[in-house]
Image (cartoon, rainbow, N blue to C red; front, side, top):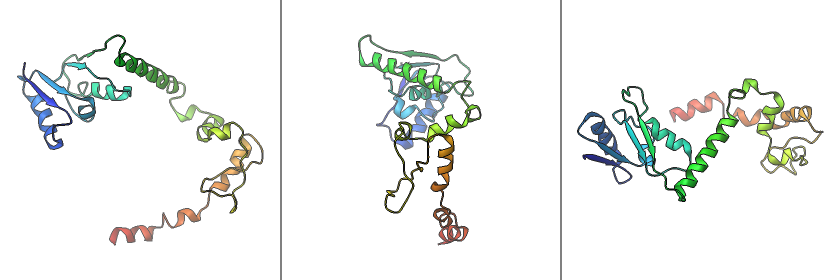
Length: 190
């Protein structure tokens, strides 16, 4: 069995050459790689079998690694195998991956995949801190109590109070210098 290896010990300049050789040379049977090194940005369309011997806590990293073989130009059926021993850490990692994918699918589904379907209360709820949701008192910004964190005024509860307090968060002067065209052009030329 002829093989090549792509892991952290391979210099980053040589990694592309390893992938190019694997994709172009049909005599190379196996490419051994780690998902952290070879899981992103590679085109492995000559691969038709993936064997995961390690699993990441983040299921998207494993999906990205699978996508290296499932690319445009792939002409073969790609088989993915995961080696998992019962009663080991890998079993727990896979269980956690399934849970994370289920949560992600529940949060981003056909009904709420777009902000267009969210009502105003749901949208504002995304931006409220946990303290605000619990009904913590907020106070109007003043020089005495300003700690660098903007606060909405506590003129009441509900959407109207929140929307009314948004004007306190806006101060045009804080953007004038940052978005001044003359200053920007001066930085480019200087």
